[in-house]
Amino acid sequence: MKKVIYLGGISLTNNTNNVEEKIRLIDLLMIAIGCAAYAFALVTFNIANQLAEGGITGVTLILKGLFNFNPAYSTILINIPLILFGYRLLGRRTIIYTLYGTLMLSAFLWIWQRVPLSIDLHHDLFLAAMAAGITGGAGSGLLYRFGGTTGGTDVIARIFERFRGIPMGQTLLWLDVLVLFISLIYIDIRHMAYTLLYSYVFSRLVNFILSGTYAAKGVLIVSSKSQEIVDQVMTVLQRGVSILHGEGGYSHKDRPMLYVVVSPSELHDLQMIVGELDKNAFMTIFDVNEAIGEGFTYARPSHNIFKHVG
View (tube, rainbow, N blue to C red):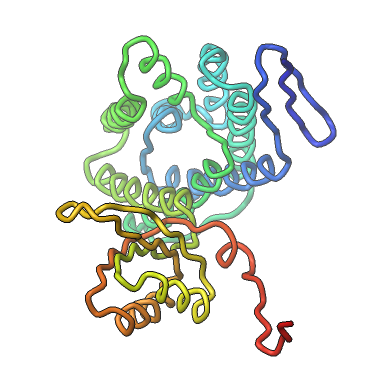
């Protein structure tokens, strides 16, 4: 079978398998924007205030601190060989996106170093760490959300996972720790402390963007009046309800469980509906990182109360 990869109106084919991978222009645009924000943070906040970084980007900052080697060039010189070396360990689209992300990061590092723009933080490392974490984390989160990467550490981690059986997450963590430790060659303990603050804020922003910006609440309901609750939720809240078939652990009787996803502002209304219909109902409420579908990422169907029903 033939694999087809679309780039605008261009298709790239591969006869090795039947998996289709699409190269979307929106992905390339968002990866470029993410790289621009990440590079801006590195130049304006990290480099300007001697804040280190983990991974391959951290290595480029070490070379900058010790030998004044431009990160725009070292990013390419270090990453490209690693990416090409691990070509067979990555999918076709991953390779394209990673190469593209690396080139975009390098280009924007070069651009931001030549733009006559500086943000005066009055030598406040706390503000610098926060600004770097927020700006860089937002850029990297956007980059990762649309399938891009900018570093060769992913390739190294994949190699260790394949040939040594070491999980990727563990390898990536230790590589970051190693690079940060080596960074003490050119920065002092005080700057390293603020680098750790930057890393925390950075990771929180990345996780927030990757987990989705439309949070919701998931609710499991066990009640003897399941159908009444279903009718009220669908009528009053206009939310869909899934009926799951469960079994009581003690009685071994069939018990329907209702699964509902609502926005945080609707949670109280749902609790009121269940409480009024069945005071003995059991409810479990949990966070939903991202809700996609009708009523969340696009409009719910309109219900005209004056519509004539024949």
